[in-house]
Image (cartoon, rainbow, N blue to C red; front, side, top):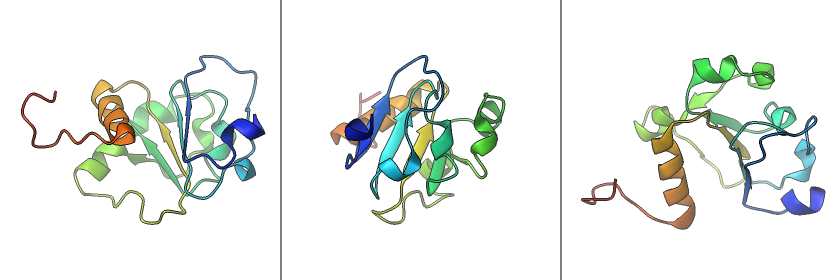
Length: 123
């Protein structure tokens, strides 16, 4: 697993089951964004990363393993300009989303470089 996540800009996991955590925080390079879609296998990195983004703070707090998230930031707060988001290219970010489709759509668009804001018919 260390070879899969080391020196990557984005690590995306869609695994629905892991027995325990799969990676150590020090395996991730500065600037890495980790997106574990089902939030399994990566709970131990929350306290070691610079920012933890979520789609719903209350929903995430109810999820097993979320005790390691000290100060989660809702993605919507970044979109509304209430939180700066990533302020340094060296910040390591983990993004836990429990199921808001729009957040996943926008996140996917950001990954592939599509900007839908202000474009008619994008949604």
